[in-house]
Each structure stands twice: as C-alpha cells, then as structure tokens.
Image 1: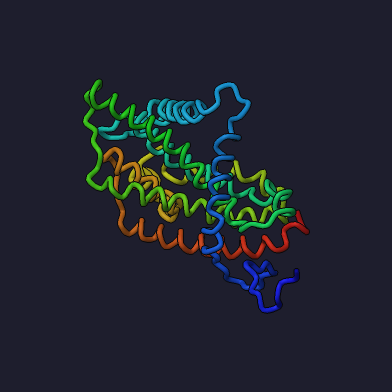
Image 2: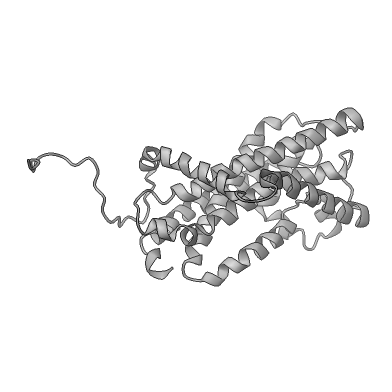
Length: 288
C-alpha cells in the first residue's frame, strides 16, 4: 500500500547550504547518541592498558612534582602561602582539561572519517562528546587536588583556604570547555586539508601552556619580564587559569576585565568554530 502524496514525511535529509546553521534542536534529538559516544570515549581511552584510569592520577601528580622542583626549587618562583606543589596541581588540573578538549576535538574528521561517510547524525555530536567525556578526567584530577588540599590544611597546617568567589569555578570550567571546543573545531577543519598540522598540535599546546601562567602567578610575569608580559596578558587562557587557581587557593588575582575579555573571545571563537565545522563537514570526505 503506497502512502498518499499528502502524507508528511517525519524527517527530511537534504544538503544544507546555509552558512550559519546552529541546529541545536537536532542535536537534542540525538542526545542518546551523544551519551553513547561519551560512554565510548570513557571506556576505550585506557582499554587494554596496564594502569587504566590510574593514568588520570599519575600524569598531573608527576607534572606538578616536576614543576615544583624546576620552577619553585630551582628557579625560586614564590607561591605565597600556598605550598608550591598544591599551587602547580591547581593550574595543571584546569589546564589539562583545556588541553584534552582541544586535542580530542582537533582530530574529529580524521578520527571519524569512516563513520561520517556511512552514517548520518549531527556531526557536532562528536566534538561535544569529547568535551563531556573529558569532564570525568577533570573531575578525578580535581578530587586529587582536594585530597592534597585537605592534607596540607589539616596535617601540615598550611595557611590556605578557598576564595569567597569559589562559586564562579564552574563558570571558569565552562569557559575552558567552550574555548577548547571552538579552537578544536577550527583546527579539525584545517587538518582535513593540511594533514601535517596535526603534528604541530602537541608542540603548539606545549608552548601555549608556558604562555598561560600555568606554573607561575600572572603578577610575576609583569614584575620580572614586563617587556614580554603582553604575551600572557593577551592570552585568554591565562585569566581563566589565574582565576581558577585564585578560587581554589585564594592566591593570585581575579581580573574582572580579563574574564570579560576571555568570555568575549570564547564566544567569538566558538561562533566561528561552529560555522567552519558545519561548512567543512559537507566536503571533508573528498579531501581527507
């Protein structure tokens, strides 16, 4: 029995020619697939590894220890009343979340080329799933920070405390996630044409870390190297990390103007990231 010509179709899949197309309604309709991708990312990252999720703990702890020895013991960078190890662990934890979001979304098209060429679903779900799944890793690292915070507070009796602005910490994490998502989508579109860019991602993120005040206070850069301080002051990541560390340790500064600038840059980067990503998804299979 043939359906009537007047019977409306449930869904119509056709080529999209809009330059700006934020189809959030369709993404919401595929939310079950999004959660499935999140579960896949969490399960498969450390599958068939010896230590498994323990790598979530080992990496920030050893990095914080290394930074403490090099930058605080050798270079004599002062961290005020906050123990150097705790100071570094706070910065590394928030930085690692941005780095994970950026690196995982920057290879979206290359990593999912086989699936994208066979199955239809909103392509934006793939980078979104990476950002959400990385929250689990960040949550574990934040828990480790709280354990060491309690150790220094109760056992070592250090003069540390949370800032009264701790309530903005989730907003800082959201900014970090959106900035990593936007930059990652822009880079993923470029990698489809210029494959050698993927070799520069790790080098670029490593260099960016040193310009983001991860292992030193923002004020120290202004004091010691005023001629080059603008490299950090115009970096939106530096304000997020400095503010996050301030909320967690009550050490450092909280720049309202810097955070407003960061929020503006984040929205612009995310806006253009979605546009470029949507445009690339229509033709990337011919160039990848």
